[in-house]
Length: 451
Ligand SMILES: Nc1nc2c(c(=O)[nH]1)N(C=O)[C@@H](CNc1ccc(C(=O)N[C@@H](CCC(=O)O)C(=O)O)cc1)CN2
Ligand SMILES: Nc1nc2c(ncn2[C@@H]2O[C@H](COP(=O)(O)OP(=O)(O)OP(=O)(O)O)[C@@H](O)[C@H]2O)c(=O)[nH]1
Ligand SMILES: [Mg+2]
Image (cartoon, rainbow, N blue to C red; front, side, top):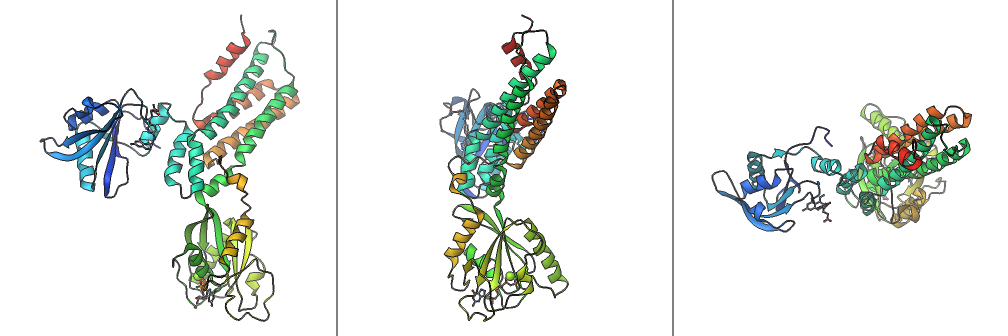
């Protein structure tokens, strides 16, 4: 989102950029209706609000640019919370360009990235987590990701963090009143009561933080790295899981030189599949660089599919996994359609033939099990925080921990109050609501100081 002051009446194409049956151009700002009237001979002013109205957009010389449907949103009842006019035109590139140019000529300016949503935020229609959810909705690649984005758009995360912040406001108010007005008849809660309330807030933060991993998976996919010796069938496995011939497969060892990434859905869970260069000790130049990249991917993996060749004895590189990756591992014995090597030993999770597809269902089951994505975690109310929320929550958690230590020592109430305010501020950043006046409001309304 832009952070420049957002003023004036902005215009932008709201629909996709290519050629389509209909394109949607949005105008938002104080002059939206007047500008649309200029371009459409008063049709916007005559339109009933929120009702599609037929109109013609004309250029300065009076020539028709297009036959359109206008929708006028008045009294700030709109997505952005300010006057909006939407123009549904024919979706040709030239038509869209000419209409946009005409609206610019009539006094609109081109919107910056995210500026409509930014205005919705500034006008209080959305909090920051909801604005982020709009972006998540648009980029969702799976039904689960969509559901999580909808949950966030409904205000789930904003509500939860605001509740935590409200609890802290009460706590800070109480603590500061106690510090500032020791002679007043304020119930001097003992440090223990304060600390119990801090512990409750910490538990709430921990619950939200625990969804970060799920949020990352929803947004980026499970990093699934396909490892194995050259020619084991790694690229064949990528292609099989994808259902298309994405990677080059050949009987020449060392075919894949650089990593290849593709997203797939496994029972609705997004996996980012990463095909790698085969691991072996010899080889030089390009191949060695390929192996270096493979090792780096292995270190960052959530899941490793270790592909072994059933027709060969186990190689040195297959005995131990490279590095000390924390990833789950599923061992796949490939080429089971061929005569197995007599000396093959081990207990693979899956016996697979990339050539025939035999064992693919079993592989899916094993991946699902290795990921341990219980149904409950991915159910209806999938709240999943993003990295910005995580960073704010971590800051809040460390301030709360500091406040707790100070209160435990029993003598640094002022410092503890400062830490609590820091925690509140960090929480407030999540929904974009930071307001120091609120604490004062609570002090004076609930404690009647100076009566
Ligand atoms: N034509 C069109 N379709 C769209 C959008 C849009 O801006 N225009 N949206 C853009 O993302 C999404 C829908 N989101 C919207 C959210 C709020 C309001 C709105 O008019 N809010 C008013 C009135 C509320 C009501 O009557 O329910 C308000 O909040 O005051 C409109 C669309 C997807 N589809
Ligand atoms: N019979 C049989 N051949 C297979 C199977 N899977 C792969 N192959 C063959 O094995 C050879 C190597 O397959 P690739 O998928 O290119 O192997 P890779 O692990 O990606 O190899 P590099 O990229 O060189 O590391 C090709 O000739 C494949 O057709 C299988 O299940 N059965
Ligand atoms: Mg390959």
